[in-house]
Image (cartoon, rainbow, N blue to C red; front, side):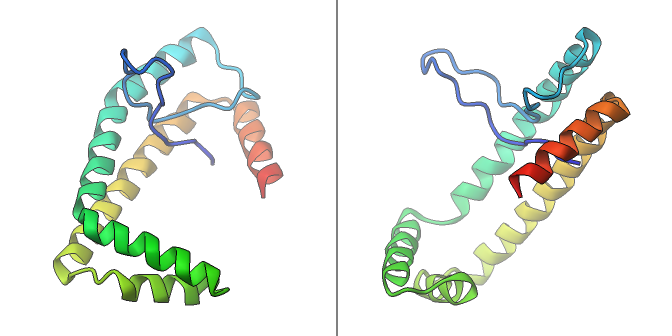
Length: 141
């Protein structure tokens, strides 16, 4: 089941929207009742998801991010791809064991939260709407 879990990007920078936990593709039309329930889902889970993303982003230092970006650029220029690219980049920006543990913990929490969001979102949808979501996902692959 696909649900697009990403923070909403506000077009108007002055007035930020609340973080969005679920984005519904335009191909799936929701009833007024479903929209109300979706809004409640977004209000409940959006801030939690944003908080986890913020925590995840704060684990790696600015210097490490810069080193990773430079290593990634160089490795790509050298023609490295896939696992080889990841290995070279990861070796270049030296993440500590504590940072790895924090990342793993945050990733696990994020996965659990996203699973809960998908489960509750799926409960709102009809079988026809679920089929449209799956069909839309297959077209992207």
